[in-house]
Image (tube, rainbow, N blue to C red; front, side, top):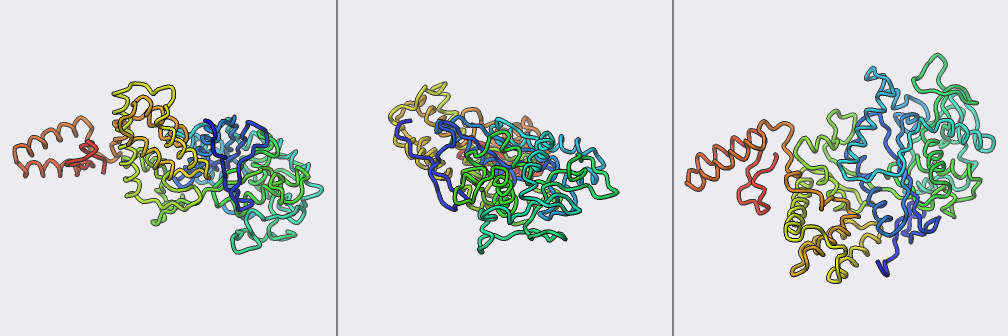
Length: 485
């Protein structure tokens, strides 16, 4: 497109919106903190990857050659932010009496399935932490003499050895606070483990020999090593959830500064990435977001209740990524209805036009300009969605060109509007005891009863559907006839 507005992104390090200027002209190199694969991801976790996907799609839309990396943490992440305690992976393997490698494989594949279900594009690289342990040891050896010291528990990073430690978290103000426990012998409370020794008398399923004893890398070390190895320092953008802004990312930045022999953080590039971006929390008031609650809110639970996963993606897009988003079943249902309306509109266009035109045509220039302005304004997807609604509502325009305009917008929003059909969105709940053919038969009987004014029979058939997990939708303006409960 001609005369595109500059892409402006909010940099958590400077707490300011900034025009995106790539480190390497024409390229965009992005690293996103991925999951620790000890359990299924919950939908709050998945919000971070919807956000990162929209960022990557926006960079592609803006014409940059994108290299995106997402890591898989299969070792080294403790059960909290302290420097002592169990590794999440070791704890999960012990609790399930399984190999830690089997645990990692199972939950990695589950995460990848959720990625696909949400129409999130696969990154250029899935970096697996255990595949980079030799590089982690070499990285630690490089910085150890000037920036680290040994304790009985392992090798620790001295945060006083780098300038501006904690600037990302604003640890010296009321904006941020740490969750770091004291370990005997640490020089500063915020010092953190680079390498954790296996305690005497213990054997871990995942441990390696190192100059500091047999053990495993610290969680923070993994991301520094993999991002530097695959993207080079400095790279363009580092993303993650806002919970990483307080400890994990400040520690990662300190390691990057030490490794690159860089100065203070008045130059953001010294942090390892020029821009640090964080999505806010998904809030769920019942407390079922936590993985410790048992049947926590994972994507499969939404599917089992009859909600298409792209309805959850749309729900995420309706809020700005830096705003808290409250989850409710009512809100998810409203997002599903909005998605259905969009899918029906596109289906009607395809019936009239077949395939999209090569370009949208001049009638759509103004709307697409507003879309570009919205997405260039720190990924303002909520406004971008209203522009999509405006495009869908346009009258007396070429249907093939309208499809082309929708394709442009959806290339960033990632709702798959030109691939979905209405049947794909009507999922039968896992608990339902009736199949779609039987539903259609009962609905036909009910329509006949209503036409014959036999309302007692109509009500009886409606109640039978309800007992089987299906709501009949009288006068449904979308023409859906029924929906899962």
